[in-house]
Every structure is written in C-alpha cells, then in structure tokens.
Length: 291
Length: 171
Image (cartoon, rainbow over all chains, first blue to last red):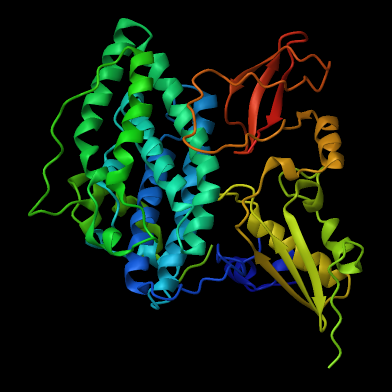
C-alpha cells in the first residue's frame, strides 16, 4: 500500500496493520454505565472525579520516578504501581464523563480541564521529594485508599463497586510495597532512619484532609464512602508499620485550607500547576490528536 | 426471526476466540488465562466478553483488537467485544493447561489466591510462597522484587540452582 507521506501511513484507518488498534479507547466498553435510580448524576460524576483525579495525579508522580529510582527492580515496581493507578483513573474518569451527561472522554477530562476543576486531595500532587518522602506518601495513600475501596465494594453504584473490587487487590500490593520500604529505611542506618522520619514528617500535614468529607460525598448516601469512618482502621495499619520501623508518628497540624477550601474543592498547592503543565502539554499542543 | 444462541464452549465462535493468545504472555491463550468470559452468537453477531487482569493492563486494547481480527478472519462479520469488571479476575482462573504452559516457559504459576474478609493484614516480609523453580523444581526460592516486567509477575531466585525466574502473582 502506497502513501503520499508518512503521516498518512500512520493515520490510515486499517487496524490490521497495527499491533495496537485505534478503535478501542473506551476503558469501560460494554460495561453498563446507567446511573442507578435516585442517584444524582452530577454528584456521582464529581465523586468519580475525586477518586479518579487522586489516582491520575499520583500515577503521574509515580511515573516521574522512571530513570530515577534507586534500583531497576524499584523502578519497575513504581512504574507498575503508576500503571495500576492510571488504569483505575481511566475507568473513573470515563464513568464521570458519562454520569453527568456531558459525554466528556477520559482524555478531555485528563488533558483539557484547568487546575481548579481537578478534585484530587493535595497529598498526591506534592512533588516526589526523596525516595523516603515518596514511600511515606505511597504508604499513606495506599492505606487510605484500601480501606476506602473495601467499603466502596458495597456501593449501590455497580460500576464504582466493580472498580473498587478490582482496586482492592491492586492497592494491597502497593501498600505492602511501601510499608516494606518504610520499615527498611526506618529500621536501617542512622542516615536512612533520619531521612525516613523527615519524609514522614513532611507528608503528615497532608493527611488530615483525607478524612474531611466533601458535601458531595455526604450527599451520595450508600454510593460514596464517608471518609470520617476510615480513620481508626487507617491509624491501626500506620501504627503497626511505624512501630516495626522504629519511627515516630508526627503530630503536625493539617495543612491549612484556603478560605475553607482544599483539594476536593479544586483549591491546590503551587506544585499542581507545574504537574498539569507537564502532563497536559502534548495534548494541548495537538488538540484532536489520537494515539 | 431466527435466533440462534451459542453459549456452550463448543461453539465455533468460542473455539476461534479461545485460540487468541495473550500479547504479553504469548504462550497462553485468552481462555488459558481466564480472561475470556463468554462468547455468544446471535443473529450473525458474535459478542465476546472479556475481563481485565489488572485495571491498568495495557494489553487489553490489543486483546480486543486481536479477537476482532481472529473472528473476522473466521468469517464472522459483526463482532462486539465487551468488558466485564465484576467479578474481578483472579489468578485462580488460569486453567491447568495454562499453568503447565507457564511453567514450561520458565514462569512459576501462581498458588491459590488469598481469600479475604475484613481488614486486609499487612504483609511486612516477603510472602513465603511455595513457588517452585521452573528450572530445577526446588521450592527453596526467594522473592527478589514484588513487581517484574509486568504488574502480574514478581521476580524470584532459586536458592538451589541460583536461577532467577518470574512468578505469576496470586491475585
């Protein structure tokens, strides 16, 4: 087959010539995405964005470790954890775009929303820092997300329930991976202990927000999880890891809200703008491009 | 209107779909892997249902693509590939045949997946999996890394013959 130019050859719509087809981009293809009766589609979409944005932004941070991890095995682990989170994010964003009737695709939601429309908690947008900070953050996130997903399995929304049921298995591996590193560093040398404690101290102000429910979460009775109910179980797991690692649980006050608002309201820290600029630049430079 | 529905695993469309291999583990078919959940044929439309192993599995698009092409080549003009998330895939769904093929390819097959209820306990030491070395058969093996070239595999090393190998994780 002859083409006038290389671009025509790669955009020609004949899936047979490619290992990866171009027609299957919907991560929920064939899944019934009807919003259950009595559930507000707008609220459900916002809730899916909250959970999806958490996963998307942390996935982006995980991928930033590529070529920078301490050893090849950890590089692969971090990339794989990022990939799991990206998969969860793709399903959640797709669900959001359908639930509110806007029909926005995962790409539109990931690449063309401005910062104030992102609903992730501020924990996930913080720069990676050193390996100790990244492991402290991953431990906190995975521990929180695991207890959240374990309850979300009982959601009356069948799609959220299914995403959570798959996620529980994946996040269990993420939490164990982070916990093992926190213990290895905390219970390691004097230097590794100091840096692990410093990483934990730096993460801690971002923990409080995880347990402050947004009005949307509270309105979505039996659909969403009330994050206030997760704290005791979260603390139990964290305490076990810190005790084994010989680390001290920080007592830092939660990071202040801005005018009463935080990540779930679209109010973010300075780091978020830089992260989005990098993540969205290619899609925004070539709107309508497919890959 | 004549409707024929074939849900038995003996149907021709099922046989075609079941032969499609996994793009990252080409020694396994989608049926061996337990990813192929259902194939029905109704009014000339073949509907294939698959489930992802991991949420972020990058092979899903290729699997769908390969299924469509295999069925087109077999003469089925209309093919609809659907995804189902519930119940979530488990490594327990890998068939005996699939486990044999994995071991032959040097990948230790998974043990039984954990059955859990209530809070999930932390695993702070590498799991004492009985994964046997695919080269010498020894069960004296240790985990090197929890994640390997793909999310579904861990890396282990045999303490008897020193051979490193991949282990399909229990999920």
